[in-house]
Amino acid sequence: MKIIYTSLIYLYLLAIRVASLFIPKAKIWIDGRKNIFEKLQAQLSTLNSQYQSPDFKLIWFHCASLGEFEQGRPLMEKIKSEQPSTKILLTFFSPSGYEIRKNYTGADCIFYLPMDTPSSARKFIEIVKPEIAIFIKYEFWFNYLNELKKQHVPTYLICGIFREEHYFFKSYGSWFRKQLNAFTHFYLQDESSMNSLNSIGYFNGTIVGDTRFDRVFEISKNVKQIDLVRQFVTDKKVFIAGSTWEEDIKIISGFNFRSEDYKLIIAPHEIDENSIQSTIQQFGNSTVVSYSQANEKNVKTADVLIIDNIGMLSSLYQYGTIAFIGGGFGKNIHNILEPATFGLPIIFGPKYHNFIEAKELIHLGGAFSISSSENFKKIVNMLSKPDALKKAASTSKNYVLSNIGATDKILRSIFKDRT
Image (tube, rainbow, N blue to C red; front, side, top):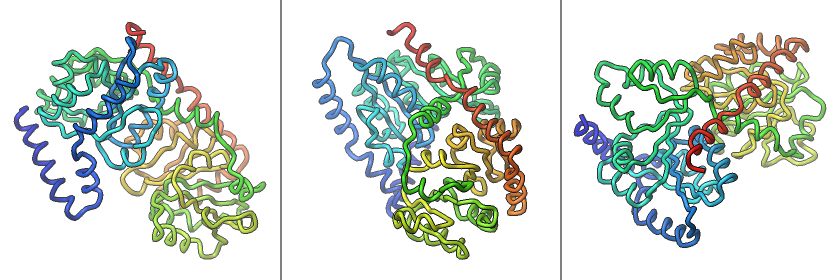
């Protein structure tokens, strides 16, 4: 099975190389890995010479993309805060993670992960020599895991999720199940994941929850005012649509926010010129201004403010009354914990079932799934009633508060014998 797995890795690499001739994202993926071992060796050598110390430690964090990075981030920052001599190597598989976070200051080195071939895995571990390896959520690269096990490197999975549909639990999954022996411990998000692991003979797990709760809670405590947004919202109710796609905009654009005394802020997932103009056209009967064109004069008279940059969304929720999170009419919804930590009721489309927090918040009454414009109008009108709004808002905020603490639990457990 190992030969078949590695052969598939090589075939995947070949497919990406071919795709890179036509697809920009694939080319970025390939280019980002050119001469990667030489670059890695050089940067680590520089790091070692700068920070020579008997207490020097290097911890390797690996995440697939941006979402997993946000789960690893609280633990990385906690480690750097409490153990200044510890250095962190962060790797990404996807360009959508690496290209956005390649300048993240919480890690000492940031690279793409070389392909999971036996030779690359062996060379990577020989160069890095990590004291600890930490994988996030469900990123499993079996040649790397095998090499970490051979080198006796303590290896952890944090924010882990296991589901019955994963190949570990299939009739053909015996080889994949054995590879989990490489993990020293599993830090899991929920009881279902624990039960799934137990069912295949792994009992070295602990339910700690999701570190993203710690992350969004910290954001809410340190949020900064945005003057133009504050001038835009004045004393109106504010509806914030975050990470929206075209299908999301079609749903919300049919609601007359002005007649209900709302101001509308939209932060689209895609911010290229065509996407921004398409969004603006959906609100032709309203006064619309994009953030890049906003000033003290025109922002006060606008009904709709479109955020045409990246990085502001988490701070925008402080001004919100109700939030709509995009993606639910496509593959999956985006982050709902950021509006929840500010105490906003949350609305999203029907594609949310892969997210525990979405299902739990719906059950508790802090979030609402809709499938049409009619559903959307009904929920917004319901939340416009003060009592309903207050109850849903309180539910969202309390949900976050009741789930913080995973980062400290993981940190204390991993380092109980190492600090």
